Length: 266
Length: 262
Image (cartoon, rainbow over all chains, first blue to last red; front, top):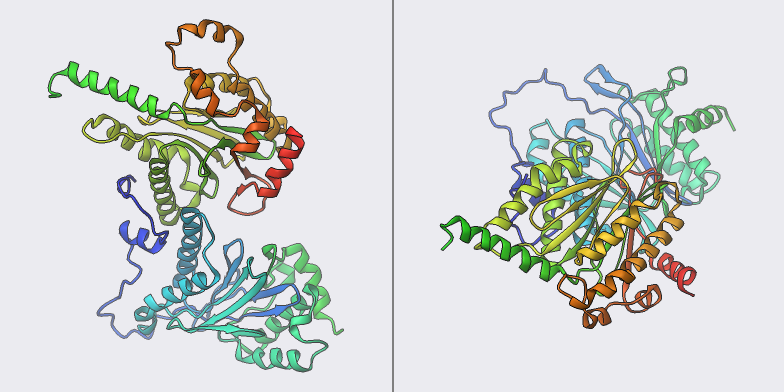
């Protein structure tokens, strides 16, 4: 535990600390036989859009491997620090690991440098993780394509980013969805934004949450890798908002009420 | 030169005196519980006394700023590597000290060819049961644990007075405001020499402050607020977040000043 005792400066870089402690995030598997039977769970639907107070991020709960449903209570929206959330689509093992690295990276920087990392710095940190993971992604065992929502306290503004598997970051001004179920709802989101009752960016939290539930239900209708809500088992999508007060998840009790009202025609 | 045991002991003893002398002007940092967590508070001429270490751990330090910084980094590195490789639940002050910092500090202190760390540290933690625990760590790696709160100060007399006052106050029943106010009153009391001591002090061979040194140090809270920085931070149980640390903002400190000294 004391190997760092004599170090006399810190860049606040958690990646550097990880490397010093023997962790190797860029490990590349060699000589893997082409094994089509090795199915990796990666079907999903996660979506995010700007609403009146910030950004809403939602995801279904299913993890699959091919036709098999592996797990039905997967949390695909993960808090990174008080003011940022990541929604994951892709290989869960890599995605959860990235979330953990990122979370420690932001906190380590904030604590060691006595100031929060800039929004741009945080956005790039995820990009760097994805870039380091390209080899795994190309080998078909580690592809991740996340969404990242962050509230910038200085600019008093919420930012939303979509990443491809190679680490390119795209800022999203309205809405985004990713995962196998996303093609089914992208058009609906665009339609709602252009011709719905009001643009997405002007909707209230209740309207935004309700729309998210309906979209995930729709995606689940057409994509077997996206799980439907099961109120009888208290199984609901996971929905979080990010606002000036940081992130907040919608609790299961709240979801019960919102889900019920969302499922009726209004 | 140090082959003989006596020489070695003499060198260690000189080293103790040297470090204590260097630390003598170190201003008190007080760590006490309150009804929703733990509070760390202290005045200093220069900012940089109180820091966040991990989700549930805070640090108060005094001594040479570069040494405080180096040990802070060590604690940060150990806590984050451990929290990442295992779980945040495995990061406790007990483990960081017992298996990390304390042996290293002791080794450093006894390697008499090397410069010793000029530092005293106070660590606070909210344990998994939600109660506050406090640790005092000395420059030679010696550490103690306190439930009711503790203090570090360069002047051991001041430290003893404050420690006694902390133990005589039921901080756990106080809310944050009351806890801060009591801690600051105790800080103020700690500055004042008891009458008896003052009379006996004409011989001035012990390590209480000399008149000249006392002049540099604010005599009461009002002067301290005017001339120095007050730093305060809490580990609060009711944030609903995993990180319990929060430094008091400038506006909170100004409000506190208004309430206490004007």
